[in-house]
Image (cartoon, rainbow, N blue to C red; front, side, top):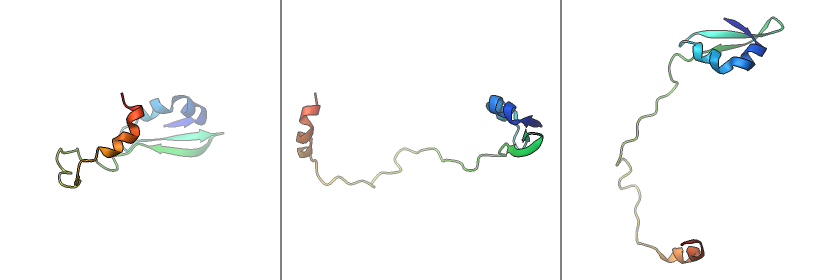
Length: 77
């Protein structure tokens, strides 16, 4: 599929949404090819889902320190 740069600017999101993985369209200006848009075949990376408890033991609080809160007393209700 070929579209002009004006069409691409006006309808880019819709044009991209129509593409199946691996499909492409060419953008032209003054009848010359200036760009090619290709739909990804799959996500370039996958993020693993978060699992509760994976950071257990990585943060150690040596003692409770409420002393520093006195500096913020005027901001607290």
